[in-house]
Image 1 (spheres, rainbow, N blue to C red):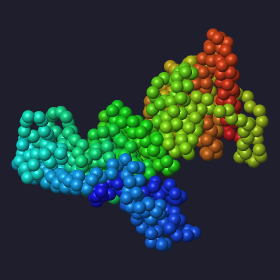
Image 2: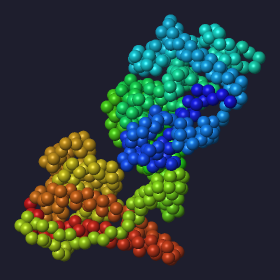
Image 3: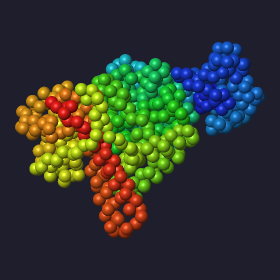
Image 4: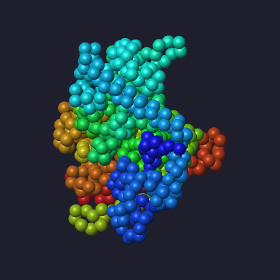
Length: 621
């Protein structure tokens, strides 16, 4: 049996060395490597290192060094051929056939590689020849400079059925068909597969051309045409730009996976050389494993349209069984209708870098997708959300990560629907004159008029809504922290709702604000009387509505007040629903839910009570 260098290289590429060694040695992450006390000699401090990218281990103490096969022979004590067989079985590789057949396959593989390299050179020549003018114009329109095109080896396939076949005739039709360069149809002459297309070579991890992607020049379908699978090319095991991205990913300490060739090329030209892309398929387990060899948390950046987001969630689901402690994914959400190419060309590299800094963790992406899958307005639908989330977590292979995800999803569910009860005590405060102050409180009379009626109509506490708005005017920097939830409030018709909207609009337009400036802008918009009334201290007994108060306390109280204000309508609506259910069927479940919700309402009232100033004399303006 002949074990060719190509077979052994593939075997090493398919074996994750740290996973192999980690079966018998406790490894610790050390940057991009793993370390441990050397298994080949006794030592107290670790000097044994494993590098997955380079595929070898090395001990700086005793000098032990080798790859996956050497580990099996030296540490496991297996004969060479047995070591290869065991690794091949684990990697899903068939052992080579008899010597004569393997020698023929090796010879043909060598010929295929040479044919692909010659095809690449020929495509480049055509791009810079007379027939390549339209392709060069297309590159210029897309903003791809000559240096970038040269770095990626871009070329052009003329719109002809036989020019490539003629140029590579020395290889013979059979080999060119096997390489995916020609198409053979029964009873007809083979003809060129790629015609009238911008040619983008696909390389393996060692930088050798193994396939091509061709983009149509002008209109036509399919927009992209890829090489078929060949003895050199397995599209589910390779990533576009993998050979160039490996070193860049180590330097940048990240790897970015995008959807297409042109996205990778545009990002590379913008300075993001660590970008790769799948090859016309959904992200596979093998491709995810490749990404994890370069980064513990690869960034997946798919298009902002529906198809791109579906591809992202498919990749998330596919990754779950493969998660390990410290190994996950994060997701970049692009503006709807844009891809990375559009973004960097239209808004520059800085805009893309900003998005990378806002990457969404895998758990968050999964949870958001399930929450948005269907309405959650009935107990059955809420139970469905809980079941789906737990079922997703159960697909995770690593038991520690699986348990963490189950706990995380349960916590998110509780936060969304049934926040556990907390004990609240009457607050006290050291006033400016010294001495601990506290004691009973009595709520002020609620305001009357259209504002109050509008707030009551939506379930919001009218006094609290007015106080929060006054607090936001006093502390405009807090508006941005709660922009999303404040913007979603529906208070009802009236001046208060319009004033809420106006305050948010002002903050959006000018983030650097102080109270005086925001009042000036509101006055210019016709809100001077209402805003001034809101700031009257004698009707709003909260720390965050006063001028003279402890700033840290005021901000903390304001955040708590907003949380209570937002939670109250949801609890009231749930109580009404539970009460109606109890009236209908009188079940114990309905009664228990009504009691639990009533406790939540009492909890919110206690939280609000803790915010009321105990001694207003200490907080006079």
